[in-house]
Amino acid sequence: MTHFNFRGNWRKSIRLLPQAVVVYVLLAALVIVMLGPYLYIFSSSFKETYTLISIPPQLIPEQFVWDNYTYILNELPFSLWFFNTILVALLVTVGTVLIDALAAYAFAKKQFWGRDFLFGLMLATIMIPGALLLIPAFLITNWLGLLNSYGGLIIPALANVLGVFLLRQFMQTIPEELEHAARIDGCSDFGVFWRIILPLSAPALATLSIVVFTSQWNNLVWPLVVLNDKDLYTLPLGLALLRSEFQVNYGITSASAFLSVVPLLIVFLFLQRYFLEGLTVGAVKG
Amino acid sequence: MATTSATPQRSGLTETSFWQRAAVRRNLSAYAFILPFMALFVIFNIGPFFWALWLSLLRGDLVDQVKPFVGLQNYLSLTTDDITLKVFLNSLQYTVSVVPIAVITALALAFLIGNKLVRFKDFYRAVVFFPLLASAAATAQIWSYILAPRYGVLTYLTGLLGIPEIYWLSDPDWALYGILLIEWWRGIGFHIILFLAAMLGVPEELHEAARIDGANAWQVATRVTIPLMRPVILFSVVMGTIWAFQLFDTVFVLTNGGPVHATATMVWYIYNHAFRYGQVGMAAAMGVVLLLIIMPISYVQMRVLGER
Image 1 (cartoon, rainbow over the protein chains, first blue to last red):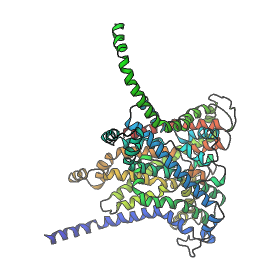
Image 2 (tube, rainbow over the protein chains, first blue to last red):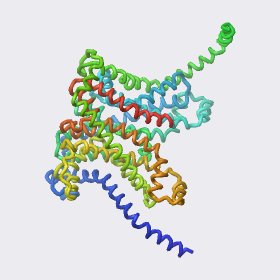
Image 3 (cartoon, rainbow over the protein chains, first blue to last red):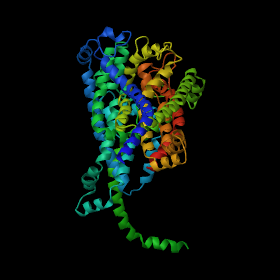
């Protein structure tokens, strides 16, 4: 019986072999296309300037050099841009999650006048393209005296409509009994939110954090219109500047592009699940 | 009739006012929770929306204190301006190219990864996610090197295959497709991951049943799997279209609309007219046109989000 099964599987394997070969060849091609560009600029960032434009292109540098990295770190305000990006992305993430969670709790668990109207209004604003809001948002930021400052990058980004949807939807699934029990124990409204709702919403909060952090990390347009001072630049804006100043110095642009991506790659490897979940929720692409 | 209906209301007044006070308190508490969000939402979303509509009726520089009212003049100017038409056609051409290409290739790749022979599906999911992590600016730098004439890797490889050299980003006939290629790489993972999740959610019994009825793999895919994935494919098309019409970052970093406006998109037009050329009214009018295009498509997205 075992013998028969073995032969059966073996036959089946032989029959499926051509299909398996085709499938894995195509998958290998997919992996090369998706990861190749990253690996290529990673290797290019260690190339000497003259080998960057050699024909045929060198996939692995003949000589590893650190010059490109020492240049962008010593001669350019790259580490400053790095710091700005981390600071702004972190503050926007924390602020957004908190502000959105507060609103989401009210929309999920409370009855109040105008609730459905306000919620519908928020839904409707999803349809407005960001480019239309860009000009007046700039004028308001200017009027508030926030141009060319961290505040101008952070404050206008804090009210995230999609975040309220995500959190409200999650909070609606939290059983009422938990709230009632907490209230009987003497919890205030805010106590219920802070001690019961927020901890139980942790997975949704994590997903939203990832979505907000990633989109802030990669945001180009808003820093572009708000900032003048190169010392306040974030990475995407800095990269755009380098691209215009070092057009064909691919060592500089490769090293800077690679460094700007590395932190998110690392975060992604550890928190993949939340990135995948955030994909459908946020549906944000810069 | 009037007296009888008025009496219960009046007699109930003392009773309801107690309840009303509790309701007021409950409401105030809820408003306190939504206040920070709503304040920012009104200042940076609702306010700007109506202000943008108003701006489209004015003429002037970004920083002009007084902008004269010109009525619909900006909209009329849009119809007579050469660049407007070019920009509009570019955005349209780009969208109707990139969306079907992305959705169809993503569908094929989702079937590839979803194949029963493939193990470690999570690995491939992560691989296709990787391009989504990079900013448009970083991706633009990566690809400008790959697409570079003569010594670019892609140029070299296509040369080996005997394909004549393509100036991906500097030939006016090709530049939009160079951008498309980059954006395809950047966004394809979104569609693949969405499709893969939907595909693996189709119950295996349905496939078995179709196979027992004598369907081959192609028939199972086109008659069973894909029809069941229709809502997800619709969502994919909608999101892809919304992004495509708002293409800006990659264009700004790589070509700045050129060569000769070959990659000038609607958002590129808005940015430049508002922040470079001092024509805020024209920029806002173009923004409203974009809104009118995006709104019906986005309505579907809103419904999907609203249903969840």
